[in-house]
Length: 50
Image (cartoon, rainbow, N blue to C red; front, side, top):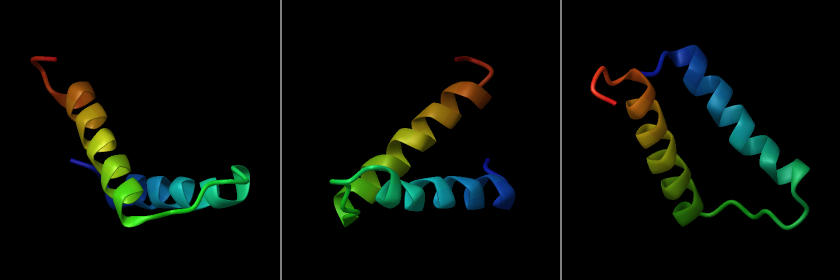
């Protein structure tokens, strides 16, 4: 499970992409894909069976 501090950091990083990548335009689909990728990654890190 992600702490609120980690969630805030992730949210800020995602928002920073808009300034760091010239052609990046946030969209609902990108947000969903980002969230799913993150959940999968964190699940692999925190799962004792990974």
